[in-house]
Length: 496
Image (cartoon, rainbow, N blue to C red; front, top):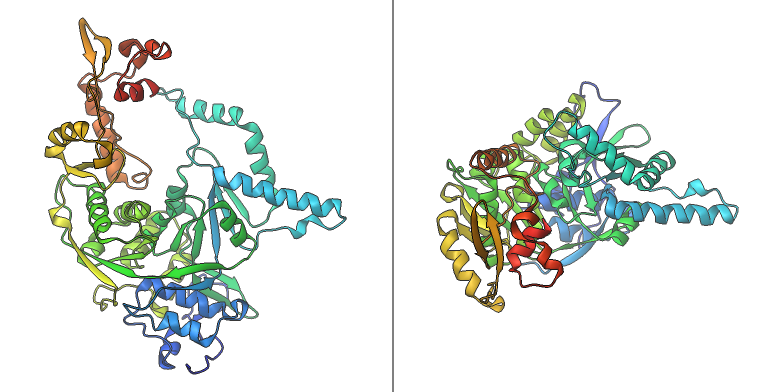
């Protein structure tokens, strides 16, 4: 039986310029003094779990043993679950609109029963981002962006009317309009607060965010030291209404990055290498925390690429503790100076700031990856762990064509093919004749280096003769409607 835990011990942050009144925080070091935590060996992501459990202990009705189980976590401990309170929910419109309709239906039911409908209100802040919104119907002229935006509003006017009503009806909701960006990109660049505060009687209480999202790549925000991941719509709605969320604490895998990316390699190449390795290790349902000199050397935008791919390597989160690079990124993306000062002061005082000379926590398993050995590579098309160095792509693709689907190949058979005309030449296209590859994706959207790289590739391709034209003319796609034999790659090309 552990010693009874005292009411949440508080400390005050030294006065900050621009801060409104005194700011206090949960003093985890005081728990350590009581023998209920070992902060030096506790992974940084689990410190967020511990702080949340202690801060909300009364509401969650947590026992001394449950608090100590988090604070004294050690490698080899059996997995357990602990209820936490979510501080914010972020939703793409695909799952956010149905959630808002549910809340609107609840309000209607209350109104019909003669009860004030305003009683239905999210208990925590909710961000909704109109995601993947614009269709590029016009391009290549100065007014293209405005024209595409106007078409988007015209095409989806009913849906956007609902969102506009919801933003005015629910005080806890903010909506990011179409054309701003992809949900997890907007999240790290504009919406994530990292450290938030709430009003108490005579002070404000600061705490790390715990965010649930309606998008599988919500873990991208782990690049900023924010604890969060994607969930289903029902779980998101429950969190919005103030219900606790059960967090499973299992293994925490420490990924030590050493060295720096060589010339010609990008964060995408690094994350494909990490995904391949972590798939071999097995991290499904576990927390992954990055550390080491290589992690410190990565920009936050490169870290975002690594954190974004957590669902692909199977982990719940890919987490980077707050450090100097985090603070620099927040300043670069235009956060308020007063809030940046609060984040840094809180993180340093409360034990969430990862200094360069800080001792490494205890991890369930250590995985070391030499960033300097990463090379340009290609992965997919179906499984991100199927990575090939760039020089091996041709041979690897030819091998996969013949392999059975059970062995990870395409099971291609000789087919009739389809006749096509390129310029003055008649050709027969079969499996493998056309290769379609993505030069960017939602993994890369917050990374200027790879986005500019994708643009340069496109520019070079156009310079070498690649044209944006109707593929149906060259590939005789009309034959598809008649059921003639077409290779799978041709079908993909025609659909594009």
